[in-house]
Image (cartoon, rainbow, N blue to C red):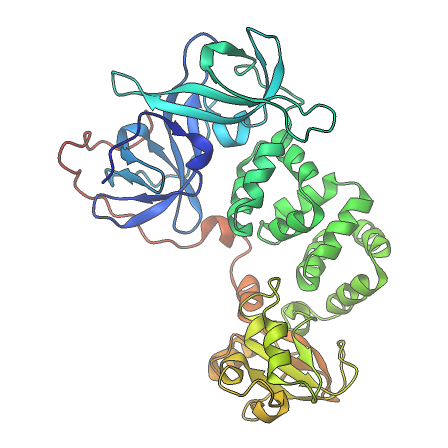
Length: 433
């Protein structure tokens, strides 16, 4: 294990793995909890918010942290798995301190906090010691001068500011996977979450919305103006957008569909026309579709698109014209694993899998699950009575519909083992200070 450095910057801790003394990862750092009391006294760092398996967020007291460095955090392994609930006297650095406007005492210059440093005092307690502040840009300068100051050299950190910005928190969210960003957004106070949502671009907000529970999706969308809400729905996958619109009041959903681009709205309306819990309702209408004259090289170029999920990139669907769903007759599917073994100049049509049946749009969720399991698939085509491709059902679509509505909060998770403390580690009592 590494020696704990004298100073650690909080923004660099987010996402670091948390290990027990045996070297097993038990979670990831999501935030740092501090106790803000007065402007004069340096705040004490109370602990970390860690996300353990199942996306549950727990509190890890600093007395349980044995080592911190640039790549990981070590704990005694004795963790309380109760869900973290913020107390009135606690402040979350990432969620509530970043972007706060402060004033530099000596110069009177105002700027935004973009990082906070913590270090161990002589009594071994962790305290907030430094504040990194950036001034607003002037003229053609895109970024103002930055300062790293002692806690006592700035004012405005203790009182929460209603007009607090969100630029640095948004930058952090852009670096996260959508599921991790959604977990952070879910835990923000309502006012702070609104500021972050306003600052996110439509595409990133759509990615994050797809990972949030339905009640959060509805709450966020209803707080947006109608034009922007329609723009965000356009950026979402059609099946996720259809599910979300179905949760809105009918008048609101109809208005947003009218404001969406006609082609995007048509896909959503088509999905909403199918009965719930059927292949048609859960399918994705934009899989990788190619004509019979496409080569293996063409197919590999299409599945490299970064916006495709692994399950959508696993199969290529070969159809007669037109190649937009509903297509001409589906000729068959080609597995990406098979295509990787074929010469790039050969035709995809020569590598089709003719051994499996297709799903019908009215197939119930149980039939879909049995179909994927029977053929060992992560995706399958959905066709109409004329054999035209309507879309594809993926295993992640299936799981979203099979799992309970609140699975993101209450998914089953393995217990984090409570191990004996490492030699010289703090005592064994777990819980909040």
